[in-house]
Length: 82
Image (cartoon, rainbow, N blue to C red; front, side, top):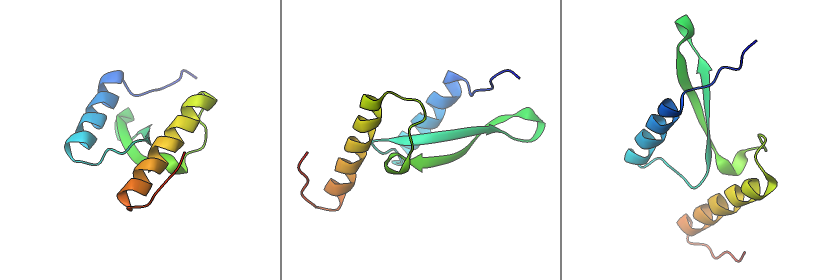
């Protein structure tokens, strides 16, 4: 069975809409899937702090968590030392 993925344009449009709506965070995962009639659609967005490693490099995975954690701590007016 061939691998089915969203187009690069589709992903860029979703990211742009999240940015414009003020909903982007330092790290997140977008889950796409096929809906009725085989159309590709965004199904959900998950916060990067709660992600497992989906095949990205250990360094990128660590950076994703560090950047998102720091963003959460700053938004809560906490002090963090990395």
